[in-house]
Structure formats: C-alpha cells, structure tokens
Image 1 (cartoon, rainbow, N blue to C red):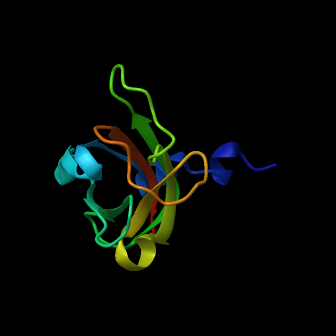
Image 2 (image 1 turned 60 degrees about the vertical axis):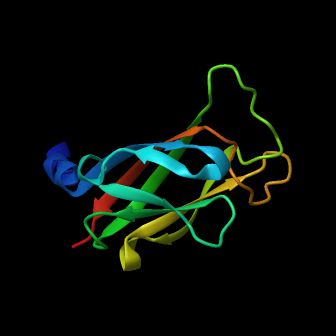
Length: 134
C-alpha cells in the first residue's frame, strides 16, 4: 500500500492552485464604483458592453489557467430590501479562462432567471478558485 504522500503531493497542489478574491462595489444601474486593485486580487472586473447585468472578469496573469470554482456573494445595503425586479442572483457563464483569461458573471432575476441589471448599490464579493495549466 503506498504512503499517502505518494498519492497526493500537497506542496504541488498548493503551488499550482490559487484562490483570488475581489470586492466590487456597484452604484446605479450596475456601474462599477470601485474594486479591489488588480495587483492585490489577480483579476479585474468590467461591465460587459451591450449585455444587460453582465460583468467580464479578466485574470491579470493571462490565460494559462483553468477555473475550478467561482463564488459570487451579493452583499446588500443595511436596510434596503432585495427586490425581485432586479438581478440578485449571480450565475457564472462563458468560461474562457484557458483561451482568453476571462469568465463572465451574469445577474438574473430570482423569479424568472432572466438576465437583468443588478439592483442598485450592491457589493459583489467574487472569489475564484483557479489552477495553473502547464
């Protein structure tokens, strides 16, 4: 029976897998007011042109990666209720990490799941789990 360390080299896993995070503060109509700097987060977020409620996430280091998981948490304001007329659910789409270094986050309505603009003045907490590709 092989020793556990021969099955899984934890040092290799840690060296080749990364967790990166950004806080993206949104204003009216989903415009990005501010975000964690690319040097600290490892990626930048931009509102996708000509798409309703969509944001493009671009890795700073380019393509040589694959996405393992993506989490988007929506942080609301102190007292304002979430509304079902705007995007309060985030879905990840268009996984182009390997070819273009990008994925997209799509905001959808909780009632119909239709693409829609995000509710005003929310914060997106975006966490990506990525692996380096040889």
